[in-house]
Length: 242
Ligand code: NDP
Image 1 (tube, helix red, strand yellow):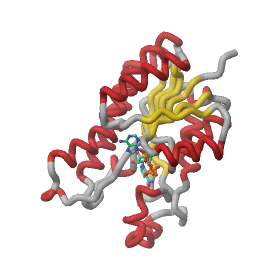
Image 2: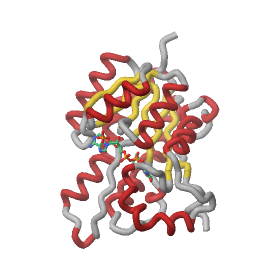
Image 3: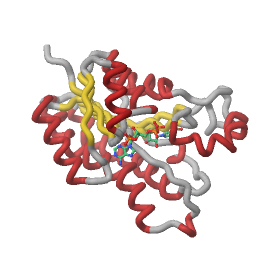
Image 4: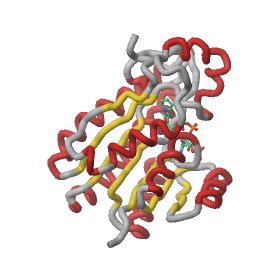
């Protein structure tokens, strides 16, 4: 039987890379999207296996459309889509330009719409699919200088709920994961001055690791989660639960 095909955006490093590794372990063909050729090729040579890289800037809808077409031509129907690519800049709201706002929306939220649109029909035709959106605890609470980031992640949670309502009846579940503080590149600047405060708020007194998020995604792609859809799962060491 042909292996199922999965697509992970932002798979070159961090959480996305851990999700790619989990999916390889689960027997999937894994296609990841990123822009950093060096990191992406290093990942492929270190890990090997049925792992494939497509260079695509996910802020560009035309590039996404072309990339998704190439993926479908090469691999056929995509069964699992993980919308993970994301950025976080630190900008006070009173200084925020429209360009800054739009860049965050394009990468963190709009790209998920374009990837879902490209692959959802194939999942519906196959009567099985999994869409996982990597949101954030920032969808649940505000954080300083992150109005754009929080809005984009809350958008993903809303999109997850509504898309589930339309697709789950066809066997395509749609869920989100809302990670807390995970030790990757994206949080290093903030960690340098906020690590102890964050650890103080967590019940589990350690930073998250990319594998913690990948383990949650593992459940959500599995048949064991067949009756779970429209949910946003908090994975954060308890930071949102005083
Ligand atoms: P990293 O900065 O380590 O990884 C970000 C990934 O997104 C990279 O693979 C990067 O690829 C990709 N990416 C960014 N911009 C683009 C773009 N324009 N086009 C294509 N790919 C892009 O961060 P994390 O692994 O931590 O983040 C993964 C997701 O998890 C993000 O959505 C983030 O918001 C979310 N998250 C992270 C948390 C944390 O504490 N780490 C907490 C909550 C949510 P490349 O550089 O190759 O382009």
